[in-house]
Amino acid sequence: MNCFKGTIRYLWLLPVLGWLAFAGAARAHDIGLSIATVRLQTNHLQVALAFALRETRLLAPLDTDHDGFVSTNEFIAGQDKLVTVVREKCLVRFDAIPGLVTNTFSGLAEGDRVDVVFDYIVPRCHELQLQFEVIKHLRLGHRMFFTFVKDGATMAADRLLEAHDHTVSFVVEVAEQPVAGPPPVAESATRRTFFDFVKLGVEHIGTGYDHLLFLFGLLIVTRTFKAAFQVITAFTLAHSLTLAVATLDWFVLPARYTEPLIAVSIAYVGVENLVRRGEPQGRWLLTFAFGLIHGFGFASILRDLGVGNTVGSVALPLLSFNLGVELGQIAVAAVALPVIWKLRTKTAFVRYWVPACSVAVTLAGTYWFVQRVWF
Image 1 (cartoon, helix red, strand yellow):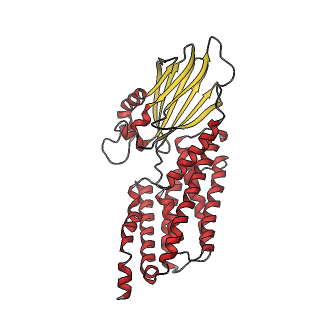
Image 2 (cartoon, one colour):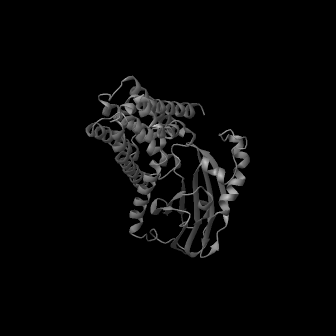
């Protein structure tokens, strides 16, 4: 009877278990990010945009048969409308005069990315203004990583644009002869970009259900601060290692491999919790091994969308974004661990709810694996 009464007290956890088990219905890495790369040469301007395929449904319906997959034929049928919508909502002006589009391109790229490119002839002008109103028509909180490159390879500016801050201007001084050197950039631009991506990483961990679930599965069986510290530290070090490897371009594991492997890691932790009752020994080593995979997953989020095409241009977003993710994880652990340890003082929680949570972790990991491999 006492056990039954104790179990009743934890019924409030049922919605949490439901969220853990069925969070797979949401995209695990949907951070609402697109890319705008603007390249200026002597008399030519190119605006290259990259969107996550799932975001384009808010601009033009490409998945006409609603099967959750955009085929090549569906993309070909809907790309003209997509290009038209994007062109109307991305305005380029030379000294307040609208630019004339001379060429367009659109295509599907690896990593479920859609590329849309516009070319302009650059007249003699003093100022270049770009307005990316398309951000307002994407989901709430969407950001666009903007990069401006002048005369080939020199990065002149990079920053995150938002719905309320979607306009950028540059003094370019395009004359009969090209002007040497890139336009001046405020010294605070790099600092602003750094903190913007840190903030984006912190926000992302709130919707990174798979990473949070993996961490939850590890922490729910910890009994001491030392064990929790080892797990969190191993996870963080593993992230940092794969981040460095991806940033330096030594090895990049594509998302089509990392996503299923992340799901496997979640299911494995849930099963191990059930098979090895109590607190499994040496958990930090397992955490480190799987953390390497999760780290590649974080890196692929930005790389799949094409953030940066050189080590220098991708390093800042990757480092600051993943720093934000780590800070978010630490914050979550700081809140969750005292609650978990308090609940573990209750016999009913350890006997019934820890296994129930582990089952939920296993089911969610299995669901994600099936979804990411076959759908």
